[in-house]
Image 1: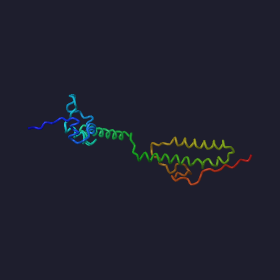
Image 2: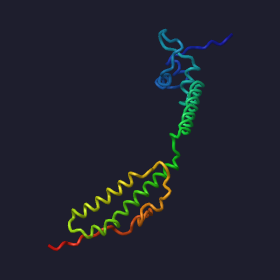
Image 3: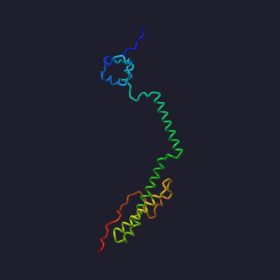
Image 4: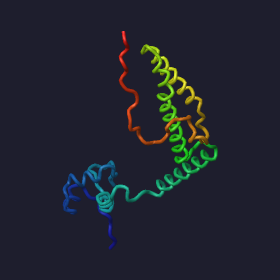
Amino acid sequence: MAYVAQLWTLNGLATELGRDRRAIGKALMGVVPANEGSGQNRWLMKTVVDAIYEKPGDALELTEERARLAKEQADKTALDNAQRRGELLEVGVVEAEVTSAFARVRSRLLAIPSKTAPLVSQVETPAEAEAIIRSAVIEALRELSETDVTSPAEDDEELVEGSNSSAEPLDKSVGGRRKKALT
């Protein structure tokens, strides 16, 4: 005599498997009953066991795997093409360029006090001192805005004459108290 697959209700499954009826119902959410549309829902035991013991992400279907592989291959080809067209940059090159640009900015800004100090010490009003300093800052910003950052700087060591372009912090403060003017 041949074995015929039996259809099981939720109550029958709970009794046969020794599990809570709600837990089985939760595991079967989204699983189409074998007797869909004919009264009380019933499932094959194999379908139920697969639904209960299947771990999420364990068994990807072949079509899903092929689609994922095709997408990865397309992404790789797109990146290769973008690199050949010169649209991508290596991280190391970008880091070197940004570091070089920051060194130029730092060097140029650190040169402002030594450049303006002799001029500011000879003026009599704060407005004149401000004008001298503002002019030096604007000049520095103009020079920095004209910097070409598309190619590596070859003269990073000689950025600004007489400036300290090292990365260490300055140990002494800049400026000081202003002497009171005699009135």
